Image (cartoon, rainbow, N blue to C red; front, side, top):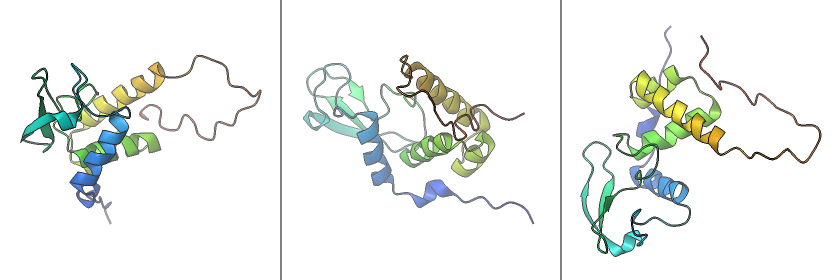
Length: 148
């Protein structure tokens, strides 16, 4: 019997995923990346074709932006559900082949985002020593890279 893949991106709600991403991608508030005006002062004028993200035009400076602007997902065609599940899968250490199949994206796309997320994690690691002398790793490095 072959393996069974669940189309998990179809099991999430678009609006809930978009709200989650907005909260986590823009914890200080979602707004214009150019002038800082809040998004409620902008006018929504369309949705992206593939990902169906609302696109805003800032009333103050006329800049166009969406929830992915300024993130590694800028200019991507992933839906909010796919992004949430990709973030979840990478943080859980799921293999890229599984993620690409379950999310309906190509392997190179899933791998590109995995590498970008890992690079962001490395760039934002604290440079100070841990406060205690002993640390448990508990599979800390599980699937840090792809198994060959």
